[in-house]
Amino acid sequence: MKPPRYIAASTVAEASTILTAEEGAHVLAGGTDLVVRMRDGLVRPAALVDIERIPDLAAIDSVDGHLRIGATATIAALLESPLVRRLAPLLAEAGAQMGAVQLRNLATVGGNLASAVPSADLAPPLIALGAVARIAAVGRERTLPVEEFFVGPHRSALRRGEVLTAVGVPPPERGSGAAFVKFGRRSAQVLAVVNAAAWVRLQQGVVEEVRIALGAVAPTPLRARTAEELLRGEPPDPRRLEEAAAAAAGETKPISDMRASADFRRHLSRVLVRRALEQAVQRARSRGWDRVL
Ligand SMILES: Cc1cc2nc3c(=O)[nH]c(=O)nc-3n(C[C@H](O)[C@H](O)[C@H](O)COP(=O)(O)OP(=O)(O)OC[C@H]3O[C@@H](n4cnc5c(N)ncnc54)[C@H](O)[C@@H]3O)c2cc1C
Image (cartoon, rainbow, N blue to C red; front, side, top):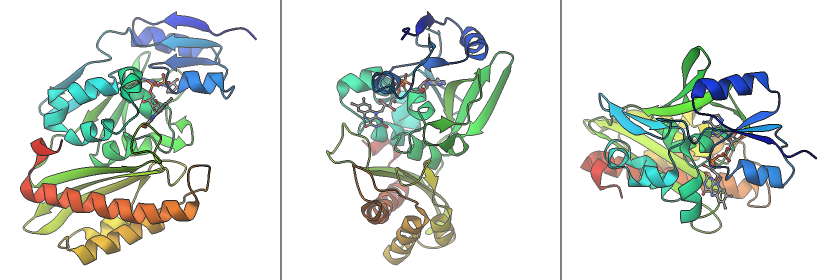
């Protein structure tokens, strides 16, 4: 079998041109997911288009309070960024629970989403924060809510020739708080058995807006809309949070695999959503955005 051709792209347009022209060409970012899948014979790329050397694609910056995280920013860069800690500490909270240090130095934010695995740890926090995916190809750009980026296991909304260039996160809102909770068979360094994130905005003691997202309990990361509906306009008291957590568990469609049974995943969903909501509400009350970590 021929080894894949390796091309180091120097612009997004160049990467896109190759990806469009060459059937079987794959983007290579940190390689922590793709190389493992190649080793296991699950994917056989004809060409690898390395995007790590494209200038600006690794930048983390902000415009008008909106955070922009370049697709090739590593998880380590996410953790070290003062901007992320100020504008979206939830992402640093999730990144801190991903892999070990060697993995965090290689794995990218874009790769975490583009691999489109249901358990991707950055997916629930980005969905809960209302983030958008920025996508580019030669001569065209588009944005998509991260929630709509996932199509199925290992299938994203990216079309042939498209590169995920960045994620954009809206500014933190007054009275809001967020939390991420992950359960893996070891505390970190592994894919999640279930992960969950919640974001709430309180106004005069009631939930004005809320977003709840779960991972590893359906073919794609899941937004728990029925649970959210139960909370909107209500005081976030323990009974209400428990009802919402139960509703969220009811919205999951988990499978049994070597990591956990479907029943256990459903049970965990309830526990994790409840914890994420409690913590998010507590943070919204104390406006502890800068004290998350
Ligand atoms: C030991 C180990 C532990 C892990 N632990 C965790 C964990 O705790 N949590 C977790 O969520 N994941 C974990 N992972 C999975 C993986 O490391 C992450 O999902 C990582 O963020 C993938 O990023 P990458 O840059 O390495 O992607 P790559 O492997 O380079 O790419 C992954 C896929 O996305 C595509 N792609 C990458 N970037 C782009 C882009 N910008 N545009 C279009 N397509 C793109 C590639 O073509 C490929 O199909 C772990 C993996 C290993 C091996």
